[in-house]
Image (cartoon, rainbow, N blue to C red; front, side):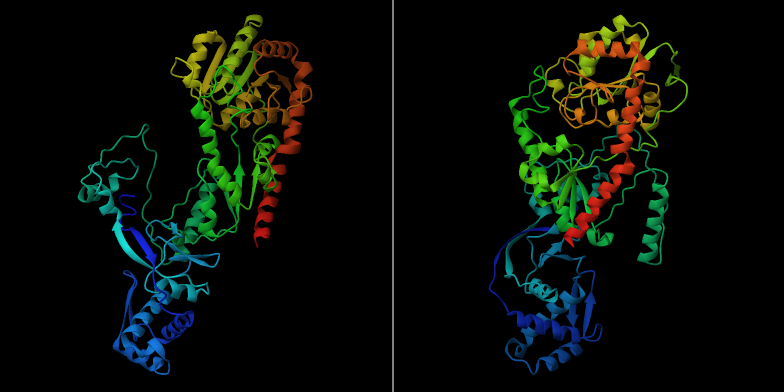
Length: 552
């Protein structure tokens, strides 16, 4: 804001008297198109200015001779024709402005943002509307303006934080008298800058960019392409797919003029779902209020999008009834070629695990109450007391990703709290930390029993990956787990809060593994039949096509 938009003025405007009828604007454009560049007028594209030459003034006078009204006034006709020439030669569609719903919307060249409430002065806006065959809007005139630089300098105290201040440190000091202090990153930067490449034209440049994107994509790396503005990107998407969450995606539809499809994961309810499921960790009054505010951006997206999809039926049913017809239930899908049971030695990292030791796996992004980490450890203690040959492998990070655990404990993390209160025998546990997909798949491949616990909330990827790896899954009898695991058919369900039942079920399964191995095979069959990418992606692709065809 301090630098990037410093040249963008803050403007107070008011309605102005209507200057001309639409016929006058048509005549102005008609006369302007008769004038020849360099001969009749001179362009300065950098400053967006032009001037009529003497030849141009003479040609204009000749063209206006047969016309009445303002065309008889030399100053008026020359000013109007200069604006008409600007509308034709200096202001271009999809670069300087967009046409949306028969309205001209100005694009800020410094930021690429659409400024739908702005308009040009002195008839220029109406000339562009006439050029694009849009209805004329009433003219406005600026009655006050101030630049961002001057506006911010009126504050007695000014400070900020950004990741790009060092490059403009001199300007921040010159304009605002603000020094820049660099905070070093937590980890050394792995970024590398390649050499500058020059191309003879736009086409060859974008061909090279596309080739580079494909090259990196084939290595399995995600690619982010930055552009200075919408116009510079040259993007004309047929469909926009966005994730609806804390920030709305509604503006994308206005920016690109394409149909908008949203992935909707969760609609918050203050009672009856995750927030109040665990009475020992009650939400604060502020948490109830926040749940309403979290839905604000989601509601905007529900209203604005052309269609949406959500991974499970339970998540679908959380959304307001009036928007549910817009939503389809389509899971993102599991890559079953990758997530599969792999032959090999029973190893956890570099440690070789003897065949007689039973491996129990537990996977979560963060060790937290919402994923039942405390209940898992409590049950593990009781199971370990009965089975000396069991090893617990807990994959995840020692942080809270969801929930309000830290407000109810006297420990730095929920992990520390559970270790202190449950006091497990750490020799029976392995904590490899967060793992990328390859080593995680290897651990799931040697699992004898996988335990998954969750309050009613978004389902973790890990339980579906475990099913795909033919793990025998012992899970909490909660939504949306019940959509995937049917008790006794492709897994085993227990009450979320009952650590004794969890330990007892785990003991029975581990003591008679051959009798329960079929659950793992049935779990794999479920994933292949309903949740593999081969099944879910064609459904998602049909949704993409429907959005494009319906908008057309």
